[in-house]
Length: 351
Ligand code: F0G
Image (cartoon, rainbow, N blue to C red; front, side, top):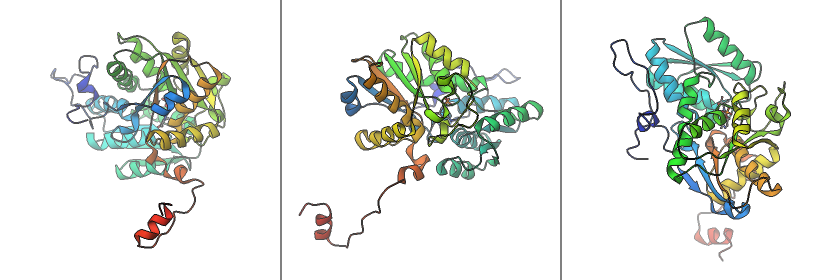
């Protein structure tokens, strides 16, 4: 959005930033994140009997909602005087940390689970000059390692266990309430490490525009919040939320229970169906994990847990270009056509 100053400046009266020793404000590290579109979804509304709006977080500078937390985390990291940041990631946090560290002039180290991160996210971390360490383990192992390293060495942890990350992420709830004029009745989100659902609830409860029921959706192969116990070997095509032991477990449960909402699981098949439907019928291309919110919307509309006539917001967390491999799964060959309008018309069945 032209003229949008980034979320710290947009909500400067509500977000505290560090003071330097001379009393002046710290430098704000921003790529003008936030201010993302809230798009009315006509076909999803018709399919569910609700008014459905999609909060398109792929429109952030690095293509995911992680930038909201990262502008605040990196502003604090730079002010701290340490020269390096570290994070564990299923891909988007590392892409965001790498970009904001480059902007801040800091070094970023990212710990990723080997072989399980989408191509676009890896490309971002490479291009922004992060030190990429592949760990022989899953996200949960990476996070434990990153936390231990940050506890013992001079490097700032920028995962969402760093509380200032969630301060930034709550702005998405404020934006939704500002655009709609009030909170929606229901807010659907994908859930992995559970930082984002925690942040949205914090956002709504700290804002004076009403409270939605929070509906969180995990992938069925990585749904510890649904089963009530950690999943030792999480598996799902939605690699961004392939997490067995969410760091913000208590925050997610609190958001669910305090709001009268729910946390449910959606299968990979439901995720992929929603992923394709959103792209082909609403014009919004997201990565598979993001489509968990849409899959959950459709599931709860069908089984009646989503009240008809509700105003619903579904957050879609990351851009589809993050994971081109999944987009092209099972596609047929692109059709070759000679350089001839008649042949084009024939192929399009116009003649
Ligand atoms: N959607 C996307 C696209 C994500 O990248 C993530 C988390 C989530 C949803 C879930 O959000 O963890 O706050 O519940 N990605 C993290 C990462 C884990 O490393 O990029 P959450």
